[in-house]
Amino acid sequence: MQILIVEDDESLAAALEKILLDNGYSVDKVHDGLSGFEYGKAGNYDVLILDVMLPKMDGFEITRELRRAGINTPILLLTARDATNDKICGYDSGADDYMTKPFSPAELMAHLRALTRRQGEVQFEQLDEGDLSLNLESMQLTCGKKSIQLSSKEFSILRILMGNPGAVFSKDTLIDKAWGISSSAGDNNVEAYISFLRKKLKHLGSKCSIETIRKAGYRFAEGGASKAAR
Picture 1: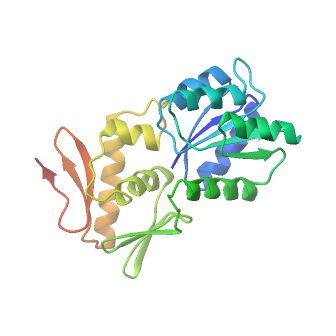
Picture 2: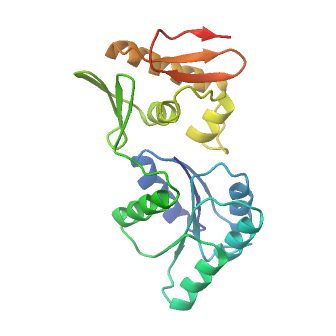
Picture 3: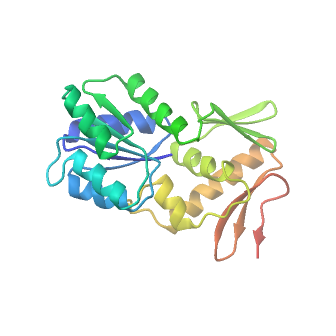
């Protein structure tokens, strides 16, 4: 899952980023409202976390403008204010949820799970495809009685592929979702992590594979050896 954080307090933004990365999410973060609006308008995110008090555009204005632009990405507003009128303004602008600072990591994750459920994308603790099980909390990949720990990037890529078996994902799409649209990662990074994942599938003795689709990208297949396909 790809999250955008828009928070002008850089220390808080870094803390939010760490919480999300530790829970297996991919994160982009920016520190002003105008950048937040431009990133959010790209539509590459599963959830937007917006501070209310931001330079250039506040969280309410970002939310209104994104909704006017037809962006329906779930929005969680963060604020130090807890006045009822502020909450009403947030919901009226089109936000989906509202959280008052300070908050605990557990509270943040609960809000994100609730937002995901509202979108009809219930997040299960485990993803099962073919003979593989991917634990979405521990980032462990299991095949039969054998398990192996994935790195954060390996987990992000495999989660995308396993979560959409048979769908083809280009290298650019995998970079956007696993590294973030502001990342300097390139094709070589994707190729390296696909290679790492294939070695781990082989180590586990899985019949599943990550197929290369020439000039298109990669897809997850439940059976057969990893191969290049036309």
